[in-house]
Amino acid sequence: MRNAAPFVRRAMSMTPLIDVIFLLLLFFMLTSTFSTFEEIQLSSAAAGPSEPSAPSDRAFVQLGADRVVLNGAPLSLDELAQALQPGQVLVSLDGDVTAQRLVDFLVKLRGLDGLSVTVLE
Image (cartoon, rainbow, N blue to C red; front, side):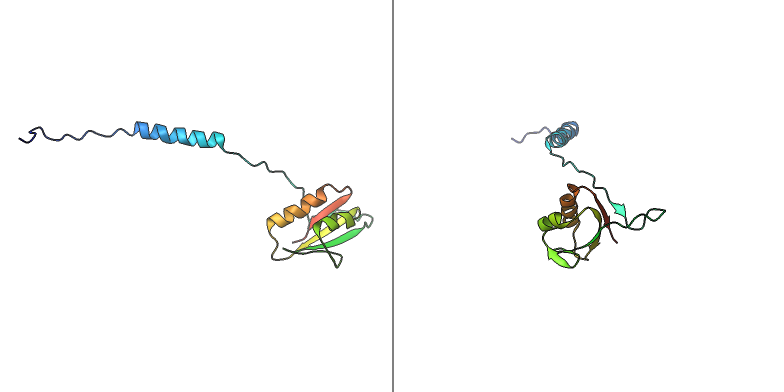
């Protein structure tokens, strides 16, 4: 006594699946946290004033992945912010410096008045 009616396969509707996917996308877009990024002003080492200006105090900083050297004397980032005088700061980057290390360095110098920071290539 088998069932004599043949098996009929219905077409599957994709509309509910697409609706669920869009709802999940909307949920994750609205609940995610976006980081806020701030701009850091940099001056190019190649661009200079058209007329020579009076010489100012210059400090030469070598920035490495694990070292900071101010005019030949090794310092930490906190000591560097205290040791700098108003004037021009020339920053030379070692090959192993990460972008985050440079940003940390520039954030430390951002609060100091009278500094002109130039990152050398």
